[in-house]
Length: 460
Image (tube, rainbow, N blue to C red; front, side, top):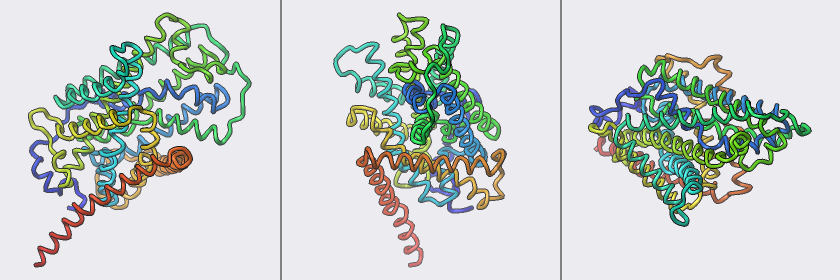
């Protein structure tokens, strides 16, 4: 048994009798992936992506390329998740590949930076559109955002079944909504695909388009965090990752084709509400409110999925590290990581009330997100070499090309997000670095010093 074994911790021994149950079917798993990926990015980024690509044909091509890039990442995670089907995903893989410090920093960054920021981001989007539908008092946005976080956390605290069915319902509704937009745009009065003169694609335009497209595809990896709760994980994890990512790719290409068909390329790239205008070509009176409702549902689905999966990362961190032992327990009666959910909720609410808006949270989290994606991608190579005896029910198809491709994509996105932050939001990048350094400090003074003291005492 190695020092990185997920079962080695004393904390785990205390909760081993109360462990996650396998309650997620293939459909549940797919809804987690699709529900988190399809947030609001498709409504916000489509016109800018189209403008960056110079023509309608290029626009559809970049959305297809983005889906293929996401699929290469999904294949990497499929191998890792089926070989190590534990709660925590990247936390587990990095623990085994690089040592406890790497898994710790990933878990710390998720707990302190990424997950609360992502939850708050989607909650603010929900609140913005909910306020358009009904504003009982002035500046109700923060109240709506906080209410979304609290209510969905309570649902997930009450049980896995409650959380997964909430996710399933919201995901089905948002997928049907996208198909409605597609049908409206395609079967209505159409415009030529290239109704404006095609422009050459510049390096800067391609770079911006790819950043936005990959942001909109974000979330395909979330299945790995709940691997211990998936029924028949050796088969269903792979199926969920591949089918879920492919389904979103198809939806995104179809929806963008409907935008182009209904509005034409020239009008699409200048649109301030592309989905609403597309729906308005057939239903002008209900377009605005209908899209607001759909975006509210999409945002809630993303919030619920992020809450559901994020708490499993914090739980895994608490199982392994005594300094976070309080969040490393699994409630036997409710069947959920209650304290991990409560802590996650509290941090998300802090961002909701302190930030006041959602704009900067994405800029702050992007560099560290792509850094850990890169680290996890490289762990496919490292773990094959380090643990060749481990049973791998699925191995990356076409290995090693998809893994190289995914890692190269991560390097590009890391470079792009860091250079953008340096040029536009250096304080946000500094904040992320400070939080990561704080994690190193806590790790040294809790885990490392504790082990050194134990070794010294054993020699005395």
